[in-house]
Length: 222
Image 1: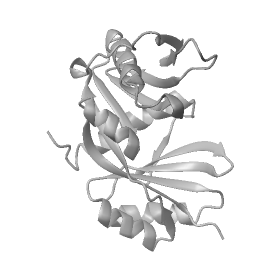
Image 2 (image 1 turned 45 degrees about the horizontal axis):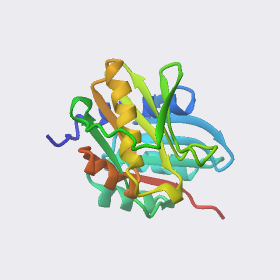
Image 3 (image 1 turned 90 degrees about the vertical axis):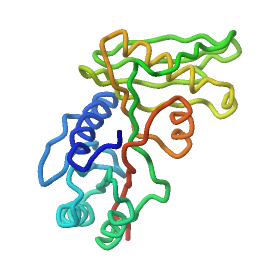
Image 4 (image 1 turned 30 degrees about the vertical axis):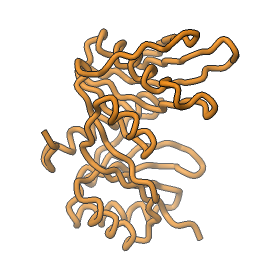
């Protein structure tokens, strides 16, 4: 069932809470129709995640990001990406060319794909976050890795990566299966993530459903 405008903010809150937990950020401050997150990075000091995307609210958030003294990104999960992008550009923000996607899946429906020998999987634990890695005997470093933050019934996946020379060998599917299986064993019911265009192809093949388009705007540098 498609997500509605009314239901989208709750899904965005759940995704952001898990994303922030997975990356060790401070809890977001909810204000002015958005979630405000301190990242403290030189090129990304703060990030605002829009909860309200009606034109008036989005213009206010876009103006805040464009006028910030330090580099600020505005992330906009939306069901109307064309209208949202027009507002971001009008405020003076540069919009990332690649649109991302907010996606979900019932973990009970996630397919199981074990890594093929000689690949092996390992799981590490840091609080509510699980880190999965896939290894190959020929490499001292992991050939694929990813994390999932487990917050109650939600499992928020983040930073799913496969080294370039190991791609197209089913490792992404095996990695996601490992994360989903462990999250479900801990009681999580719903998988949530934001996917790049490349990632979306993998997740769609695994049964994940697109719930919203995600635009990212940032202040134009002089």
